[in-house]
Length: 203
Image (cartoon, rainbow, N blue to C red; front, top):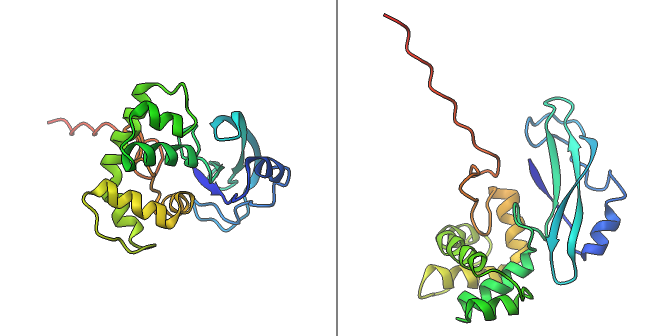
């Protein structure tokens, strides 16, 4: 399971904070709810693309000694299952959907000079599908003004709240995702698995 590392500073400062495993150690397991501090369980690496960084980043993990499941502290400037930072995705979507720029121009505005056309289309499709739900969820944080469509409304609310603050609220409180969870994931961000129905008893 992923929870957010509340890092409002730069990526460099986030890396410095990783040296202290107690700084954001969960006091209780978010999975089984046992009120015991989780044990340090090393790191895993993931790639990150941001204004200042394009490379590997360490993510701290903890282990619950009761349910034996791990919890990772995802830096709050990253979106789950995307290697691009919240600010990069925000700049792209604002340029493409808010200002009507072409995919190529929007990618350039986000600092993604070699971004594949398909990735931009994918982000746009996911955000358009997610816009009504985002607008409803963010109503808890800001009043929504008049807008011509859901996409415009969602973009305006994200700007009013702040993209990172909105991501923090959606993920921590609602297990939501700014772009919506990919199809292969359950709504809470965990891999979904369906069990086969048991066979009926014989005659």
